[in-house]
Image (cartoon, rainbow, N blue to C red; front, side, top):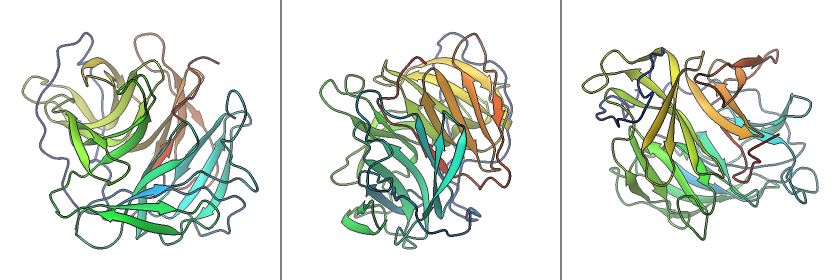
Length: 324
C-alpha cells in the first residue's frame, strides 16, 4: 500500500529561470514498497540516524561515532564526509578518496530509516517508520549501539509527513540557532527537535504539479536546494520532472524559489549533500553523482561504486564549506 502524499500540488513563484524543462519518473520516496537496502553488517563505527516515514517515526540520532570518535568531530574545518543510507543500513562517503564505507545496520529504529540530517556538532536527526499509523515519534539514537529511545509521539495521523531533512545553519532560517527543516509535498516546514512536531514555514514552494522527491540541503549562505518530481500544471505548464528529477533552488528563510536548475540526470534522487561547492546526489537506483553549482544548469558527474545500495537519503554537516 503506497502512501500517496505527494500527488496534489499547486503554485509557483515567478523567479527567474524557474521553469527550465526537465524530466523524471515515478513519485516521491514512499515507505511501501520498502527500499531494498544492503545486507546487515556489523558496525565499524556507529553513526545513527533515525527516521522518517509515512505515518512513521521521527527519530533523533545523537552525535555519530567513528571508532572512538565522530567522523565529523574534527577541529577547524570538518572532514569531507557525507552520510547516506538505505532503509536498513548506514554509509559514509569519504569525499577525498571517493570511497563508500558501510557503517552498519540500523538497530531498533523502526521498520526502516527514510532520511537524516546532520547539524553543526555532528548530531544526526532522521525519520523512520515504526509500523504504527499513529503519527510521528521523536527518538534518540545511541551513536555507539544505534539503539533508539522514544522521546515523544504526535497525537494525530494528520501530522505533516516530512519528505527530506536538513539542518538550516544558524543565521539562515533563525539568527541564533540551527533549524531542522524539510519538505511535505510542496510545503517547506520546520521540525521541532524537542517534540518532533512540524510547522509550516512556506506553503506551495514548488511549482504546480510537482512535489519533493526526497531530500533538501541548506547552505551556510542561505541558499537551499530540493529535488522534485512530477509534471507541471497550472502556472507551470510543460515542466517535466518525470523521467528525471529536477533540482530547485530557493531562499531558506522565505521559501521563495530563485532558480530551476533543471534535469539532474537521474530519477528518484532521495539523498542530497553538499561540500566545497559541490552538490552530491544519491538515487534509489544506487547512483551517486556530484555537480558544481555554477553556470545555468547542472553538469552531473557519476561516482561509481560496484554493488551500490538502494539509497533512501543523505546528509552533510550544516557547516560544510562553501568553497573547495
